[in-house]
Length: 101
Image 1 (tube, rainbow, N blue to C red):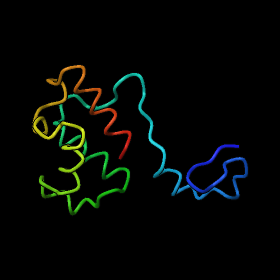
Image 2: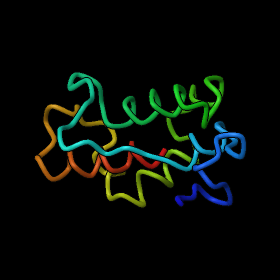
Image 3: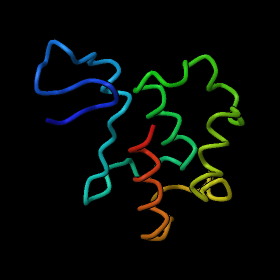
Image 4: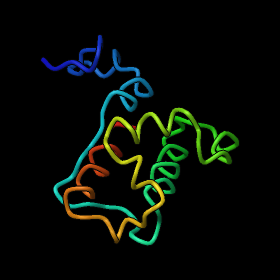
């Protein structure tokens, strides 16, 4: 048997899919982001897609939740840098960050 949080996945009737979606992240072997966006734009975009932060709150580039996430992953100092200018290690950090949103 496998569990996602409190739910057993062997019986799909017990799965709350919205909860499961929030609990699972995927970090692929290869990076998948638009390299012409900045780190901050990339994180904001995915946060909107996942429904984590409403679009109206993202008008402020210093949204506290986003800033805390960037700080946690050591990307706050790179937030205004385009993804294509990041080192391989920083791109990997960004991929891991995106998988946790």
